[in-house]
Image 1 (tube, rainbow, N blue to C red):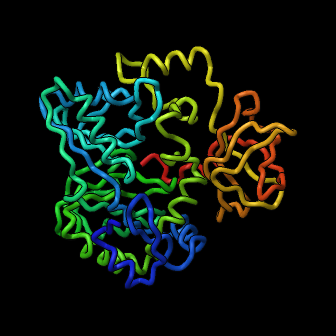
Image 2 (image 1 turned 120 degrees about the horizontal axis):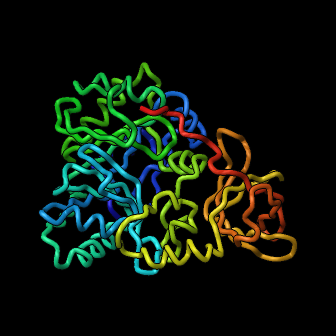
Length: 364
């Protein structure tokens, strides 16, 4: 089982540790609800060192990323980031990820922890005949996410960079606590916040410094439990749940990541699906009965199974059961009443518009 550079810090803080994608990670320090609300109202600090970073460099770097991803990378300029999907030939998602543009010859991919090896293999396979170097950076880089309305004020105390001028989905190279770092205005919570990358040997130092500097602003360390409830309220996809090798971005309800551009892997399959219409779609729903939906629960309409829950929880913000589920298109309309099968009993729910929780960071 792998551990991040911050494992001992989590143990010292009394975190409950669980296995996640082959890593021993903190699921919570106090409790999920407290950490969720702290992130929504103050600031939360997340250890995300388990995620992967892949660098693509060389004369053909732009051509390769344009081939690999659903987004039109020609729109991406230096210091820009785009969220997109890397598809297989059938349109299924190899992974969902963010792409950082340093220049037309250098891009960084930030990929999911459980798919790094698969992603590397896929990128290298697709890079045949391209003048590029593909490098696995996951062992060199640490990644911390600082999220919440007080995130900017806290991080500003540790950097000379003007964070107020950093736009959403933008990044800069500067220093944090005197350490060279990449700072991006991105996150997985629907709050304003930053993702910070730097040398892994400085992980403990910067983690503890952020907790100290942010104390008066109400910062708390946050585990993977609240990270999941935060992203679910925002209806952000989780790979292995709302996306996988057999689920396309169109089916996942994120067709906005698929740009109209020249050939990319999976384009033909996605165009065909768009023209014919997807037969199933990931939809958001909320419970009208008192019950908590969970991944894998069956979804019914009348006596007929029409889908399954991909993610579900009790929402700390809305204090009701919410979820995402893969549903037959004919039963996917907003307002449609459905039922979730929980321990052999059916509980009422209704399909609602996504997201439950709108992004609160403004247009910074």
